[in-house]
Image 1: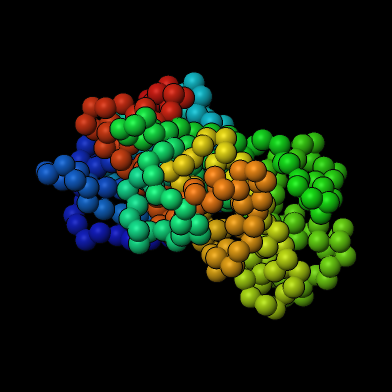
Image 2: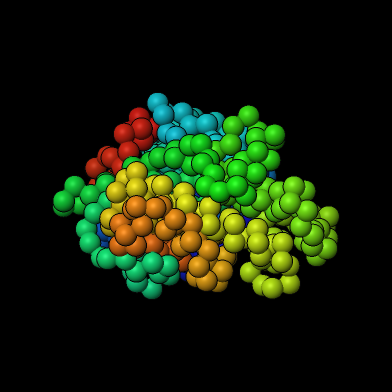
Length: 357
C-alpha cells in the first residue's frame, strides 16, 4: 500500500472523521478526513492501494484504517451500476453490500455511488487551473457530461435544471461501438472475433488501446516495437508501453495506435454530447487522457469529436476540457459524505438512494 500523503495531526476520535474513496479496477484511492468545528474537512491520511491484492472491499478498507477509529460515514465511488443495495463491480470480481461493509469495518454508514457520478460531483468544484482546454467552445449554462477511459469506459451526466446541477450515472460506455470508416470497420471485425459483442469500452479504455495496437500489428501488418515488447515480457502493461512510445516519435505503430485511440475517444465523446445536449461542456477524466495530453492537444481527439456531419457547428460551440486533478472522484465522494453528515441524503442518482447501510 502506497500512502500518498499524511497530515501531521493526532489520532482522530471515533465519529470525528469521514472516509472518501474512489474504487477502481486497478487501484483504490482513499482519503480519511477529519471534521473541523467550523464544518470543514482536514486531511488525516491518504493512500493509493492496488485493488487486485484484496479479496473484497471490506478487507481493503480494514487494511487502510488500521488502528484508527472507524469513520462515521464512508462515501465510495464504485465502477458499475448501483442497484438495490448491491454492487457487482464491472472490472473487478467484487460484490459490495453496504451493510456487510459496515458490519466488517465498523463504519456507521456506507454510501455507494457510481464512480463517474462522484467524479461529476467533484468536477463542479474545479477551477481554471484544474483543466486543460481542448476546445474552448462557447461558455453557457447547460447540461455537462463526463467521459473517463481507464480500466473501462465510464460516463456520467450533470443535468442542469436552470438553477443547479444534478449528477447522474450512466453505463453509456457499454453501448455498441459504431465504426465510421473502413479502418474502423476492420477493427470492429477484429474485435468481434474476440468478443461476443463490441462495445465502446472495447476500444476506448486501457484494454482498448492494447487491442488497437494488436490490430495494427496482427491485422494491418504494421511493425511491432521491440521496446514495447520487451516491457511487456518484463511484466509491464501493454497499454502503458504503447502510450509512452506513442507520445514520442520512436514508434510509428504506437503513434498511429494512440492517434486512432484518441479519434475514437473523440467520437464517443461527441455521441454523449449529442445524446445529452451537453452545451455546458464535456469533461475528459482519468489517467489515460492525462498521460496522452501532449498528443491529444495536437488534434486527433478533436478530429474524431468534430466528425459529426451536420452537427459540427453545434459541437464546435461545446467546450471540451481535460481534468488535470486526478482526485476529482475523491472530492466528489467527500462532498457526498459531508451531505450525509449534514443530514441530507445523496440524490446524485436514483440508484444510490438504495445503496446505504
